[in-house]
Image (cartoon, rainbow, N blue to C red):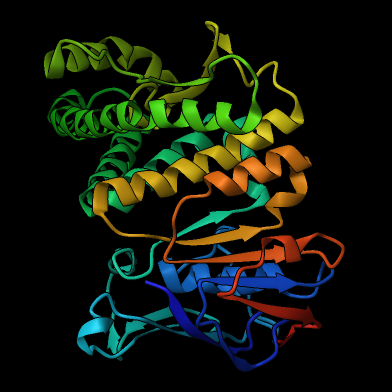
Length: 365
């Protein structure tokens, strides 16, 4: 659902204010360091209760960690039927975070996902293409969670079982019966994640390959490959057999050496790893395409439109790729763009675009 307004208090370098944003597209134009990305971060907080920059609650307060407060109002899906806007509030008091929806405290951040799902395109996404395997796992776990809240619960359950298992392994041999029982649960939880990830790969791959080629004009297909750590045939028995075979080595290292926490996602072209030979520009476009398809995937499976947050991403594309990227940008409930003053942002403006000049954390239309 689109945002109507954003209220800011003590958040990073942004002035305390309420900013109207009721428009299909909102352009934030300003030099670096003026607060454009911080504004997108505030919107992301209101979508998920956290930052796309990681666990930075204690750093986001303008007053040295004393706290901040964000409030966002959004159009309800039933607005045409006369329903009032929804209000999300995220507050950090320097010690803990409180999230509420229409004045009612939320116990779990996942409840926000159904209200204002956002897809952010930012510089840090480059790690999805060129970073460590856990960054790609994070992206695809996030994608699966957007369309199925049950995936969040399954991932949490698996991580708890993994933590218990590692604790046993660190304690050394002699607890075989406990480990045998835990492995039954550990394997079942992990297989459920594997099945969900395999479905995601099948749904995501074709669309990704088409979009990447349409923007890059590379002339060869780039596909996504999912390689689970456990056997993809044989079910529970095959996984338990692998876990038993790995135990001596796991006891020696004190950690679990197989499971969904070690699954791999990669980009493959003509049978070889594409990321290992791709240029910086090609890698950057991989990350942008992932986000593009994430938004499309969300809409295809839920029938709803996300809010898009695009942080200076057009700077990283040449003129031709920029044009093709914008033409393929998924339909959205609302889109926020950041631009430097010298960029041709006027070329992308429509009749339903709201433009703010951002300077020293203040917004002038």
